[in-house]
Image 1 (cartoon, rainbow, N blue to C red):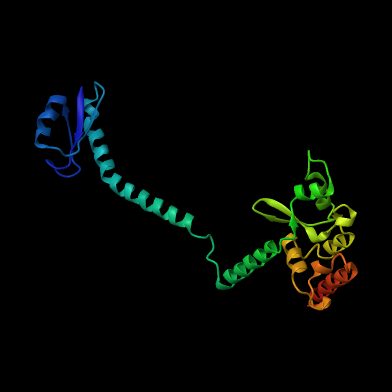
Image 2 (image 1 turned 90 degrees about the vertical axis):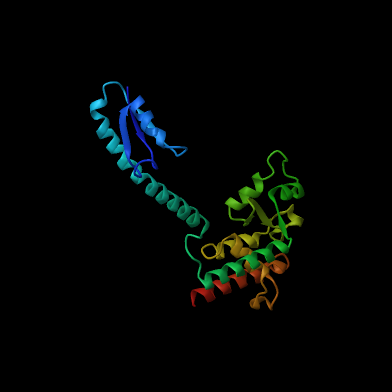
Length: 227
């Protein structure tokens, strides 16, 4: 059985040595505790041992650079994963900050209910409390905002006198802003003081002066349409 061995110090760096096992052992005595790689070849491989040794020597010379390249690629991949895909511009950062403050103000207003809370207030079935509120949402009789995976319904859009059903005017306003405002956009609009309403918030007048609120929505949409 022939043996192929490679060792870095006693012989020139990256060199290989071929021969029978005992021959290789004798020549490896010059190598102390340095790393050595030995490959035991099948019987009858003596004629090709030299070619195999040369091949391994060529590979050994490439391995360090390949490892270095892989390490650099791994570092680059980690850095790219931690960085945003697109570097935000200052105006984008400012807009994101403003939106975060607006959302915080909406949530802090406290006039929001989950489907379960509506079901309890309205006396709906406890087996599927979200069924009716979800149906209202699909029918665009009411809107929701989503926060941490939970849908919240505007309490100011419900009529306690009618068993906590959505106010009829709310559907009209949702329709007016259908193509311009999502749930959060509607929440901002209802929360913000409105000049058409004399500086009052639409959500505060939705029950007492629903037509005025609807007119304010139509006025804003018309103003946007005319620039």
